[in-house]
Image (cartoon, rainbow, N blue to C red):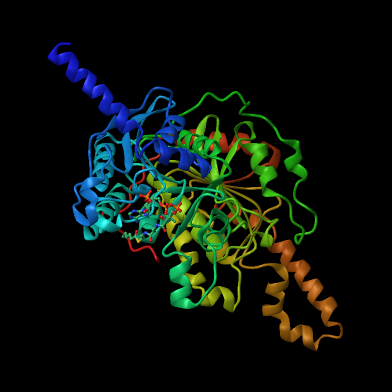
Length: 517
Ligand code: HXC
């Protein structure tokens, strides 16, 4: 065999060695845990055969605790690039078979390298997390590695989309990298995220809690809102990430991909002319409205189990990707509270950062009052959503279906927050507050003094409702651009979005604003 052939053979052998990460036994153990390996995950995620690996010969350089005798080619992360639906994507997947995927100095360098490359190329980064955290043997070098990653997450924020898949443990300060990215997806039952595990919790606070109840997917999808998506299987998880990417552009200078729309743009949806109940206190399901108006009824919901009084997610109108924000009258009457405001505020900012138009469907009775909300800082949280809408320069189309009262009317993309096209259904009620509240404030004294206080209040409420519980008052002042037939909503939104395609609006130059955090 020639020298050259021998070298090629050696390369092939080394590559094969690198591809088994921590070894066959560790791979078996990973499979027994019900989890795929880093390479298997990347293969599922990217288009077939598109993955090009980088840095597969990198090894750690730690000499503490006998680490020099234990090293694996590629160390604890697989990195590189490939395509999803033909679009360039950078990816890193922590390899739990190597030191439990724990982060070493060199592993951090590998991750930083793909992030830097993604920034140069203007392409999304997807990180698959499955790690025991900082590699204990490496001490401060592991911490420094995390900090380098966080710094890149921060600088990449709003420039390229960043998506985190949590496919195993993600503990300690390591959780801050996913938290800094745009979207997080957690695996049900096999993943968790927490600042510190159950043992330390017990020591510090005395609280007895298991991993799942402390930081499992169910906790973060319903209680904390830390995760945007959950999946039952890894196959489902990667499919969701692929689907999510189809709605978003490669970077902040590009548009989201347009798709061919085979759903008629002028499709009339008669059911919408009868969807609003006669009684203002009765709910209806906003999901039915969304399904009726978007292309083929397809909607990718974000944070679907968190703050269900507001619905956010991606859909298309005539093939154009939009971010949808909708109050949900079926849950807490669609009221805005702290969690709903935070949830929608962050989503609006994502859409604005990545040139995705925002369509808002409004039916909101107001902000939730009371000590629970005030002590929780609803003023600041509500201001986040207000700030996000007011700051956004992407096309903004708003349709008011029913209630739009007080502060929540303003917050939900009203005309004065630079709403581009603000429509209302004839059932819209746009006013400072609802009828009974208004009568209480305006006529409490007179009602008390009248012979029949209840009848007096009812009469005043009827007067108020006639005057204000309609969209015509707002339309009279041009605050509503048109009152539309509900069944024609899809067509009117599509027309508006077509009109707004060349929109140019630039905020005043500044270092950055000071959003109420
Ligand atoms: C070095 C680690 C490691 C770590 C796991 N391993 N975590 N090696 N540093 N942080 C190794 C294990 O020694 C083991 O090696 C292999 O990975 C698999 O781990 P197991 O414990 O066998 O797996 P499992 O039973 O599934 O438990 C997984 C685990 C547990 C829950 C993640 O390993 C664990 O609790 N690890 C420590 C977590 C932790 O406290 N990390 C530090 C957090 S603080 P062998 O050779 O036996 O296969 C932190 C600070 C970050 O991360 C700050 C950023 C700002």
